[in-house]
Structure formats: structure tokens, C-alpha cells
Image (tube, rainbow, N blue to C red):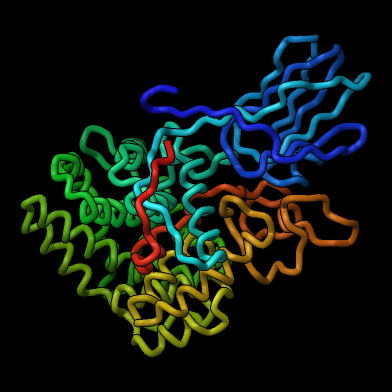
Length: 447
């Protein structure tokens, strides 16, 4: 263990024969390596998976070893919960089987003890999702991606603030994504190539400053905020509609084939982003730039998004661009329908702002709670309760049954490629910290 990193050896929680091999279940998602010491010789294949199916089918992260007695075999680090070991020659007995977990040091300041097992399980899985993703930066996925996306940081940074305090992984990650698009005082495009992600970056900076008041850090953002503001102001058309042009107008996975929903979501997000930019620029002592941001935000008009576009309704509602009664009706109809684990966090916030914290709690139970029921120990890149009934991630899938990992996805990653540990899905931990303070108790440290 060093000042910045924690490593731990975890024994299997269960070992299940899967002839001709064996499956090791370490009980929860982690980032690290599979390690063992052979007692004999022969070739073995080790396949790691975030789900049982992924490990057994050998879809990703396969490694073949030539085992020798007493010589440790160890895989490269990745995100996994399950390891399937198959002999390729004669059976090879393994001893000392373990997962070697690695994560960034981050001590929890609080724990959540509501007395409601379902909410407690959601909070714990959400926090674990962020903990596993806290590596060199706050990654988008422990297994898939392993990079920094500005949109993903918005919910994840809120969890870090609420649970771990002003941990340096968030500023480091915000700076890393900014520096890819901002060199020598010139903005070279939208962050991550997505217009919305520049806005999420601004909102995350605003929330981080509100939470921790680090003026020295905010000062390091002055140049970028001033440089990007003209692009945001210019995105407000003469008709009061956003004109955020980019190669990928991504909002969330539920709206990728619905340009009307994306346009409504971008309208609300641009208003929120300009308001946040104005707040930050005012704090930096840039009154003229702050006024430009406020004026542009005030020119944006509202309209009603498509009925099932929950993320768009939430963003428009938070931005004050739709009538509260209409927003409440849209957001409470079929509570978990068309809500993604990513922008579910803004749906929670919008419901709460409308005085419907009860509906927000219902959404947590139906969306994130359903993943827990399917064996999740960390939350996934995407999930839709419409995929049910399905077999969970923690055991074999009988013939004729739907495999929730292999067969149910609406994002671009399908066929066992969807991330099952994605910090953009961790928003309920921050929401529960903010809206159930009665359930917070001091933590003994998670280091």
C-alpha cells in the first residue's frame, strides 16, 4: 500500500465446477488481476468477466498460461468479478487463488444506514461503482473504456463530493479531459467531441466549486471558461433554440434514435450550462463575461419534449423551460420507463425540485434496485426494466432464457460488451446523501 493506492488480496466467495474447468466468483466487481499458483504443469486459459456469462464464454480478457509448479500466474489488471479457468491439456490444480484488487486511496466520510435494505444496497453499490472507477483518473468504466468522459464525471463527481470529500481525482480528471481540447489558449472542439459534454464539464465545475469552495483551483479554469463561452453563446439561435453543432449530439442511450428528444434535452442543458458558466465567471471576477452568459441563457425558449423523453423533460424542467405541472406528469408516468442509469440522476433532481422526492425514491427502487435484484454489485452502463424478465449476471443462464448481459442492451456495446461498472450510473448515492441525511452516519474509513 502506498499513499495513493490500496491493494488487497480477495479469496473467491465461491468456487463452482464448470467442466472441464472451474468458475471463481469473487463476490463483487473489482479492478485488479486474477492470480494463482499452479501445483502442476500444463496450459490453462483464464477468462475474466463482469458477469458469469462473460467469463464462461470467454468474450474478453482471455489469457493463456503455460503453468509450472510453484510459479505464479497473474493476469493483466481489468474490471471483473468472475474468473473461468479451463485446462487446455491435462487438468492443473491451482492453489492460492485470489483476486489482487487495486484502487485509489479514498476514505469514506459517511455511511448510509436507512434501515431499508433496498435503499442501503443501492447506496452501497453506487459508491462501490465509483470506488472501482477511481484509478489514474475517474474512469468511465473499470473494464471497458478506462478513459475520462466529461459527461460521465457529472454524476460520479457528485458521489465523490458527498462520500469522499474534495478528493483530487475529480480535479485531475476534469483537467485531463479539458487539456485534450484546449491548448495554447485555443479551444479545439467540444470536450470528448460531444457538445453536451462541454456543458456537463461546466456544470461539474460549478457543483465542485459550490461543494468545496476551492478558489485556487477555479482560477485555473479561467482561461478555458473565457475561451469556450463565445461558442456557447453563439449556440443560441435567433429563434431561441440551441444550435450546438457537433459530430455526435449524444444525450443518453435512450434517445440515440430520437432527434426531437435530443434537441429538447440539449435546449435545457444549454440553459443550465450557461447559467453555471455565469456563476463561475462571476466568482472569478469576470462580470462582462458572466453577463453575456446570462443574456444568452435568457434568450432560450421552452417547449414540451416528446412524452417519453424523461431526460429531456428533466433538463427542461430544471432549466425552467417547461411548466412544472407538465413536467411532473411526464416524469411520474411509468416511473422507470425510458430512464437511463446515466441521466437518471437529473430525473431524480428534477422530481425533487418539483416536490416529488417520493417519486424519486420510487425510481431508485425500480431502476437501480432492479439491477441489484439481477446480481449487480456495481451499476451498469445501461439498464431498462423493459428487459425483464431476464436471468441475472451471477450464475449460468438456462437454455431459452434471456441473458441480461448478452442479450439485452440498447447502447452501442452489445453482446457481453456492455460495461457493468460505469460510474456515470452512480447518481443515487449522491441523491440519497442529500435527501436522506437522517440515514448518514460517520464512516470508519474505507482505505
